[in-house]
Length: 75
Image (tube, rainbow, N blue to C red; front, side):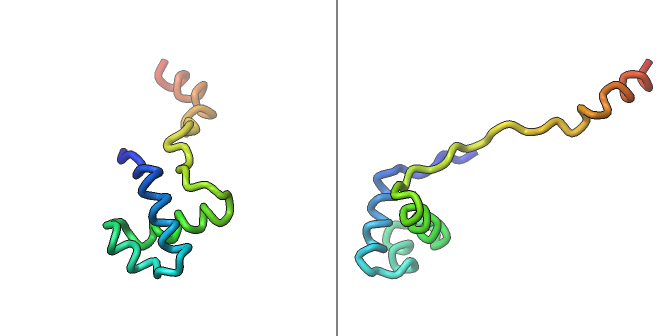
């Protein structure tokens, strides 16, 4: 999994957009995807922060409800 880009870069990108520069020109200047610029700007407007969310997390076990049946069939 790829690590999130630095908060410093995110802050500079959001500041450039806040000054009125277009998302496309900011993305080109900083070498990031336009979608990242849009998402970071939206996150800053809604939360006031550019810090990324946690990555990964707990995955629900798909076969857990069928565990007893599977074990019985294997016996």
